[in-house]
Length: 67
Image (tube, rainbow, N blue to C red; front, side):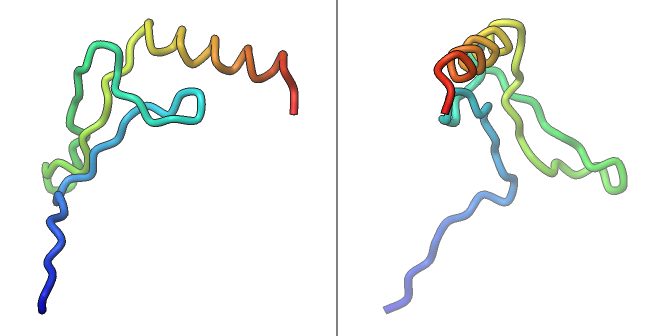
């Protein structure tokens, strides 16, 4: 029996905040374009101020708690 795995040709990346991969708060994404051949190399989460605030708050909590 042959098994085939469907793999997207373009990787998709989310934001890594508080130990978890998350979509941008807006849900928006953008394509990263290879300047050599104009092909899309990846689709990335389009982080904005709200996402930065979430990341900074998470880092602050981790720093305050310690190891």
